[in-house]
Each structure stands twice: as C-alpha cells, then as structure tokens.
Image (tube, rainbow, N blue to C red):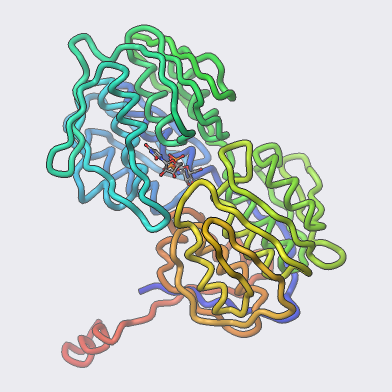
Length: 438
Ligand code: UD1
C-alpha cells in the first residue's frame, strides 16, 4: 500500500517558490457528466489528472462514451447512451457518480443508478435530487438499492423548484436535466459555487438557455438538443487555498499561478486575519506568511460565498500553530472532524463539542504515523507534518490522489521534503516468503 513520508522541521523550513494550480476537481466531474447530454464531443481543457476523474471516465464509458485524455485535455463523446444503468461497483467508488442521473434521464427519459450510500463525513442522502426530478414529472422508485427514474411521456417538464437546503450536487444534477426539459425550470435557493457557475457557462456554450448564472436563482428554458463545445475548467479554489495555507503555516512565500483570489472571498478574509499577506499577481497571487505570530481566527463553514467546508481541515491545521484559541464550526457535514484525533497525535491541542472544535495553538508539533480519513483531512495532515519535528508517515493516501494533482512534486518544487513509498503488509511479506515474489 502506498504511503507518504513527510520530513518536518522545527522551526519549519519555509516553503518558497511557485505552484501552478490545476483545474477544479469539483467542476470537472459535473462537466464530464454534462457530456452525456449531447451526441457531440465535449472537449474540456485544464482537466486535472485525478483518481476521481479516471473513475468517472470508467462510468461514462459504461454508458457509451469514448474518451481521449492528453496533456490535461479530455474529450468525451457519447453518440448514444448504450446503458442507462449506473451500477453499484462503479458508483460506490465515488459519490459524484450520481451526477449522471440528470443527464441520462433528460436525454433518454429513464435512468437507473445505484444509491451512493453514506460516507465517512456524513450520511449524504440524495433526497433533494430526487424531490426535484419528481417535481419535473419523473416517477422515482427505489428498488434493491437502485434509484429507478422515469420521465413522463414527452420528457421531463419544466417546474418551479425550491431547495429547502442548499446542495451543490442537487443544483448541478437538476440544472443539467433542465436544459433538455420542456418549458421553464426555476431553481430557487440554488448553490452558486464557482464550479456551478462554470458548469452553467459550459452548458450555455453547448446551447442551453440559462438566466441568473452566479446567483441563487437559476431560470432554465429547455431546448430540444445540445451540441458539443470546448471549455476551459475553472481553477481549483480548494487546491489554491490549501497551498496558501501551506505557505502561512511554514513561514513561507508561495506564488500560486493560474488561479484567482476572487474564487475565495471569505477564505481570503479569514486567511488575511491570521496575518498572512495575499497579493494579487497577473495570473494568481502571492501568499506570504505573517511576519509575527499566526493570529487565531474563528471560522464557520457555510455554502458559497461563505467559508468552504472543503478548506475547514486545512484551516484547522493552520490554527494548531496560532498564538491563541480559535473556534472552528462545521455546519455542512455532520461528521467532518475525523482529522482531529490524527492532528492530536501530532501534538495539536484540539477539543470538540458538537459541531465546534476549539483549537489552542501550540509552540511545537511533533511527527507521527497518521491516517488520511478523507480527501481534505488528508492534506491538513501533510501541512501539519511539514512543521512537525521528525518524519511523519501518512497512510491511506488514495484519499489525497482523489483530489490533489501531483501533490508531492508540487510541494517538492517549493522545498517540501516529501516522498511516496510502498509499504508491504505482513500478508504481502508472507507471500514473498512462500512464493519468492511479491
Ligand atoms: C459537493 C462537493 C464537496 C463539498 C460539498 C459542499 C463535489 C463533487 N463535491 O458535495 O467537495 O464538500 O459540495 O460544498 O462537488 N444533502 C441532503 N440531501 C441531498 C443532497 C445533500 O441532505 O439530496 C446534504 C448533505 O448531506 C450535506 C449538505 O446537504 O450535509 C451539502 O451537500 P451537497 O452540497 O449536496 O454536497 P455534494 O454535492 O455531495
């Protein structure tokens, strides 16, 4: 099994240099799903090479897509949907697979998809997706762990849909389906994360009619068919924020290129309040650590434009080294604090009460063996390990590979001492001794 070793230093070795930010994972996945809406090719540039992207390629191929992926440019082409069913063995690998439901239902009139099940950060139901499709006239049945969705004769109908709570995935799924529905669909209390705005812009290039892009009310007038398009994927604001925090935590200075601070309004405010300087450049910005101590700052995660839940664990990593006490409140996912016990193993001082964690900054962190618990939590451990004295070893790094393109080389490029290695389990070692090979 792959692991990562991070050599940490106290005081930290400042990370210095440039990092090129990749295209956003959370924009790429819905954009790839949108390719199912048309029988023409969709070409996406700035596409990150991530495990989740390869998982979705596998699923799209199952539905009839062909794909080419060279130099961060992916082209997806589905002349016809050859299978309307997204099976459990593909969906269980990645929850975002549920995003094929809307496009297949809209294009073919029926779709079947395995229920994605819960995950470590929360139950994550898909009831809001299903409620919206029902409003558009679809009949929804759950049988043997599968969602069976059937559009009425004549296809999905436009409807007025008000989401009781904000959901990124439900907004994306229904937005895609509504582009091919009959009449007008209005989505109230929709998410307007930059990744959704990116999806909407791409859909418009494909011929969709969407008003209110970038706001919480989207009005979509259905069209008969969509065509292919070429679209550049928006920069990854979560990767951007993660490396900005790495600069702050290590006393360093990193120029982040091919990105924009405008994607992270609330994060920018919070990071600047810690004493970190963020200076815009021509195609990104420079993140420079505070001159004095890292100041404690409270954050509460909220839907966009609030503080992103996907940067909560990384901010907690930063607060482990502040010169005071910070409160971190998670309102999006009910179980997104699994990194706390791991960070505590590295000498961080953190207590949890319900949805709020209290982080008291410490003078010195120490290396430990830690375990990645989810995608964003795992990067918080890498950040802390860089400033914790000694060698830390991070296991279950497949979580990292799901969302951070080329993380070792990006960190090495700014002076991080980090390497990936294979550790054989005792069972593997037994096989070696019996068979003489691994
Ligand atoms: C997306 C992001 C994820 C991010 C999250 C919140 C992708 C691939 N993933 O996930 O990185 O952390 O947004 O910004 O883009 N909910 C329901 N019923 C539903 C749908 C959601 O109760 O039908 C709840 C969820 O359990 C969660 C909250 O709503 O508590 C927000 O979830 P949602 O915005 O849908 O997140 P995802 O789209 O799954």
